Amino acid sequence: MSHLNRNKTKLLNRVRRIQGQLEAVERSLGEGATCSEILQVLAGARGAMNGLMAEVIEDHIRHHVAGAEIASQGERDQGADELVDVIRSYLK
Image (tube, rainbow, N blue to C red; front, side, top):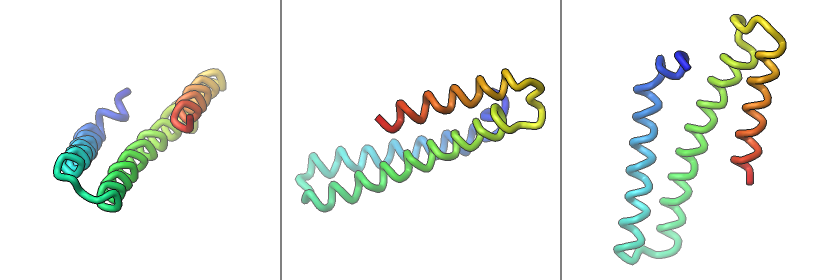
């Protein structure tokens, strides 16, 4: 997926920030933070993960479903099917 390679550094930086947020959840639990504080940290991590997911979904749509370089309807259908499968698993 060459289109992801172009944004590789940006995506990896987002993953590292998410890792930091998950480490903050672990610290909060270990330090005995209140439920409210832990929920806030979890909400931030979830939002960051959702943002990353949205970015990768957008890239997939632009390059595997609606990309001008896609020559056949079969390729478009395959890209759409892959996206539907991922979204279904994500929403479970």
